[in-house]
Image 1 (cartoon, helix red, strand yellow):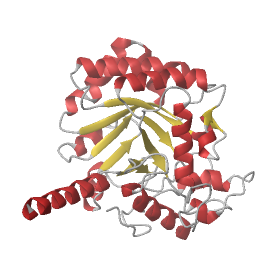
Image 2: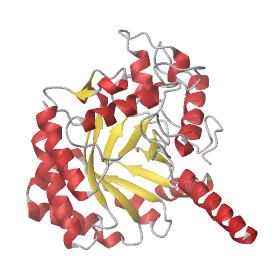
Image 3: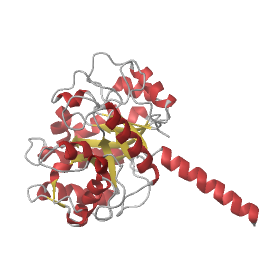
Length: 330
């Protein structure tokens, strides 16, 4: 009996380590003119024990490099392709071109749309796109392997603190509820981009830096960090529209090292990333226990990224592949 108990303890420990390691992914953006090759990037993921990658379009050079690597992939549909996927034949062609030939690439999720808002022209393409890609995945007998979803931003919610008051805005509800219903019926998670940095840096908020960086001692309405509060506000909002059993995968979260006046610094970014990694591997939230599948944003600084200067400084690694912070992903 003691030997059996010891074996169970060992197996449980191995399972926990496996789950913890696979909770961490990193987003791979390519908007830079000084970035390493796709093969070098794949090797960098492997050498650092990063087991999941998000790709923002069907980058076939990256997919070729990922063959046989077992790196789990979250694959986005390119924004300019969304309208075409409202046609079922086009969706089938997309799957047959970018998914089916890569049977030796561990494609886990497909994101149809990233941070599309109800007022965006692309909003009307998201649900039919998800439905048609799902149909094509099923026709290819991949429904047990690949989950189809969309990635949302926090702006779809209001009353996010305290989290139990979280709800989708009146304008967002007609857009998101049919999507949530479809995800529930197909056992797919909702993808959500969660950035405590943007909440903290908003001049209209008064959020403590320690609360945003996982350094707060004690509790704040049961919450010791902003990340958990934001994630749970999504879970509470989902409950209110019939998505109480839906899992949320955090498809982006990060902190810039430069480019702004409130919050960006190498020290703050290092602290955020390492504390986030340590937390999501085993932590869970007050509402949702267990490891939280999370993709850190992003692998490299992207010097050609449009928008605010902070957008160019979210990288975990420098373009020469040297680590910016020296954090551990394990």
